[in-house]
Image (cartoon, rainbow, N blue to C red; front, side, top):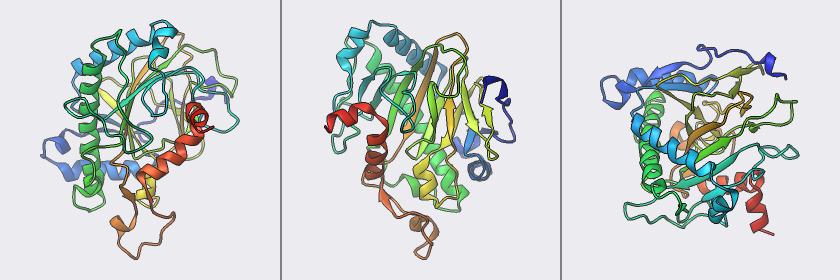
Length: 323
């Protein structure tokens, strides 16, 4: 599909939901109902009143852009080597077998304790790899990570309430989450020929994605009839989407929708991304939600095992490490 065929954002398709009354407790059920309805449709939502401070967003963006503008040899000092932490260079990820590699660079990090220690109980995590040449990177990145995790926790409470469940249903094993955060840098690209993307069409692997866009845009979401619809930045909002494990956890009641990125703006584009997941041993089992007699569409699987399977297919560095 050419760029000209992209439809403008449709707020009936991707609604804006104020989650302030969920966060402050003034109307959690009202917000939960809106989240529930949106998650059954296209599974993408703009959220306002999210609680991440502008100072945290600005500091994260500034540190990220300093990093990506550094020489390649500096960034390669913290390239990924075994765990999903550090720098992933251009060509390191592809979303579909046989597709061109995504036109992006990434820096990835995850949960660490207040003392800077990180669990090493799963292949997708270990000690974070911070660049020594940007001293503030650790503090501003962890501040952003923790605030985005707070947003994800509020939303997971909302989804539980929307399903008429106790609000902590999805949060029982989230003290040391498998969540991953990333700064994703997209250089400008020429108009797509239908094959090359900043990120190719895909669904997200984990439970929930929390995205902070910059002002450039480029995100596109596939509507229920198969059209691609722009999801441009809206000031003061985040974009949140149901990912594959939440769709699986809800036995398909919530929808994980294909999306892609094409940056034909002529400008650099930067996204701040949190991929929220609970602890790796967490079982993704719809019977915990709908009862023991729920007819399963897919077999229960642990969060960690599922993500291992998906990441092996998508990231070149993991294939190299296993050869």
